[in-house]
Length: 323
Ligand code: 8YV
Image (cartoon, rainbow, N blue to C red):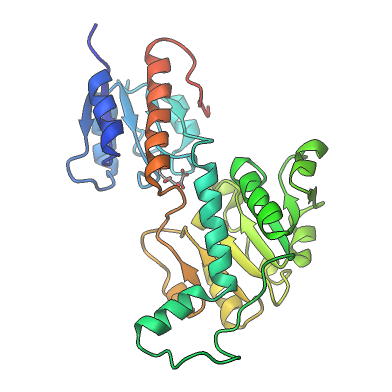
C-alpha cells in the first residue's frame, strides 16, 4: 500500500523530519514560511495529511475545496485557534494537536516572564548593554518581590496547573484560579489553589495574573480596559496563551497611565507584527513566542504529531483529536 502523502508546512527538528520521511511520503516546506490561502487549497487537493503550525491561518477560505484529498490536519502545537474547526469538520477533516508535552516548558517561560517583569530584568539588560550602568545604588532598578504574593491563573488546564506548581512550591505564592468549568477540589488542593467565582472576582485580588486559556473568538479581548481597571495598581499581567486574549491598545494605555505596574508577553495579536503602542512601553517585557521553544519539547511535539498520524492512517482513533 502506498504511504500517505503528508505536507509539513514549516521545518521541524531533524529527528522528527527523519522519522516522518521514513514512515510517510513526506514533503517538507521549501521556504519555511507560512503558507497562504491558495497554497493551502492546493495542499488539501494533493495531500492525505497537512501538518500546520500556529503560523498557518487555515480559515474557511483556505478550506474552500471540493472533495479534498486531505483527511487530517495534525497540528504541531497545542493551541488551534488558527484553524477554523467547524469548516475543517465540514470538509471531513479530523484535527489533532500536541497537548501535555509542552506544558512544563511553557509554564517555565511564563515564570521567566513573571520574574523578568517583576525584577525589571529586561530594562536592566538594556541599560547595561547600552553602557549606561553607572554602578550599584540603593534605589537603582528596584522591582517587586515575587515570593509570597498572590498569583491569579486564568485557565486551569495542563499549562495553568504547571504554572501553579512552580509558583506555589517554588515561590510560596498563593494561587487563585479562574476557569470556565468548575475544578475538582482535590485538583485545586494539589496546588494549594482556590477557584474564584469569576474573572472579575479574581482580578482585584492578585499581584500577578498569568493567562493560560485558549485563544479564538470566545476569549478575544477577555482582558480589556474594563478588566485591566479591575487589577491592582501594583499588579503585573503575563501572557503565554494567545495574543488576541488581550486588547493590546488597552494594555498599552494601562501601562502608560500606570494603572497596572507591568506586563510580560510571549504572544501578540497579529504576530510577528507588534503593535507600535506596545513597542513604546519601555518596561514591558516581550519575547518572540518562545513558550515551547526547547529542543526536548519541539522533538516531543513532533513525535506526538507522528503518534496521531500513525493512529489515524492505521484506522485507530488519534489520541489527540480535538474535533
Ligand atoms: C507552539 C504554542 O510552539 O503549542 C502552542 O499552541 O503556542 C507554541 O508553543 C506553536 O504553536 C507551534 O505551532
